Amino acid sequence: MIPSMARTIWRVFVHLFSKSETIGYPETKPYLPPRYRARIVLSRDPDGGERCVACNLCAVACPVDCIALQATEDERGRRYPEFFRINFSRCIFCGMCEEACPTYAIQLTPDFEMSEFDRTKLVYEKHDLTIDGPGKYPGYDYYRHAGLAIGGKGKGEGVNEQPPVDVHTLLPGEAD
Amino acid sequence: MSEFGSTVLFSLAVVHAPLLTAAFLIWLERRLLGLWQDRLGPNRVGPFGLLQPVADIVKIFTKQDWIPPFADRGVFVIAPVIVVTTVLMGFAVVPFGPELWVIDLNVGLLYFLAMMAIGAYSVVLGGWASNSKYSLLGALRSAAQVITYEVFLGLSLLGVVAMAGTFNLREIVEAQRGVWNIVPQFLGFFIFFMAGLAETHRLPFDIPEAEAELVAGFHSEYSGMKFGMFFVGEYMGIVLVAAMTTVLFLGGWLGPAFLPGLVWFALKSFVVITVFILLRASVPRPRFDQLISYGWKLLLPLALANLIVTGGIVLWRAGA
Image (tube, rainbow over all chains, first blue to last red):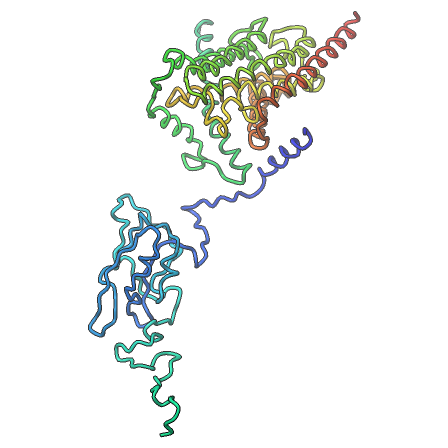
């Protein structure tokens, strides 16, 4: 018992000379990996348009109900959120909204320095959330991949998409 | 200045030095524990976090001082005072250096033991007066611990007394001019150190407060400065036990002449305090029946054997 205790005491003492794990935060910033889950942003597609199609999946996926939005359409028939509001005093930064998003619009970033003295300032509106670039997914545009005919893009003109087939031509019997 | 005036001034210094040291110890302990756990510890308030005790004191003074309605008011208030008072009175007999002591009692060691024994009452009384189950359990354990360690605490020091032939602390230091007592009395030193740990309720023998089991044990119900008094009392107890270890086993103020005696004394006490903190960082807490079992079945016989052998050698040397 005594030798094992003595060994423990010695080993703890030796830690006096080992490097501290602590990062002196405000002076030295920690390295956070790109997929770190902190401040939520709304990204734009490569053309600068909003990626969000106001499908409400993020609001549904959110376990603490901190996302609120209202869908509307522009003159070309593109859906976008009329308002998009995240209450960061409730947000638990779980990233479920990012997983649920079909258009890569909502993304979590490694920026965590968003403390406020006033709680109401933690409610971010759309202009607070929206960033200029495409975030983690450069080059992706949901509407170019979707089969929807919209904004001058016809049926079958999307990326990796083939022109629509008239099913009547595939029916057996009529050789035409 | 008159002799009376200088005595009063020195007494005031002896009262305040342990208080300041205790405050500084809070910082030192947190820093050292941090370093031993690969952290940094408090380093924000002032240079190296040295003003952390000031912040702690401001905090503890501005806290609500609440006495639970179910507590025994009188005893509840007096209990934390007892520990601080007895520990401070214990410092009266400590010889800090040549010609540096408040009083040179010829029964200094007995006086020190008496003060420590009275200090133990504060824990029992505090736990009893709190009138809550965790406090009572803490007090109960403290009582069990007291009757264990007080026995071998006294016996472990008798070897030193036998070698010096006196209870006077100054003369005990003088008797160590040749070789420090830690060499011939290593067993006594070891047992006294264990008893000192138990006496000051330090880990690994913090069984009466055992925050993992008893919330905070005997001071669960205490808040504000009353809690602070227990806290300061505990830390001053560490300083006192370290000072006594220095006096009894490490040659007190003795040391090479390039440093004054007081500095040697402070350095030795500092090393002992560091060992106290190191033990807290590394040794797990035993169950209280284990402590009692070790105390009665191992340390008490060891202390007795040490006393018998020391006494025999002293008599043999005296040619009896």
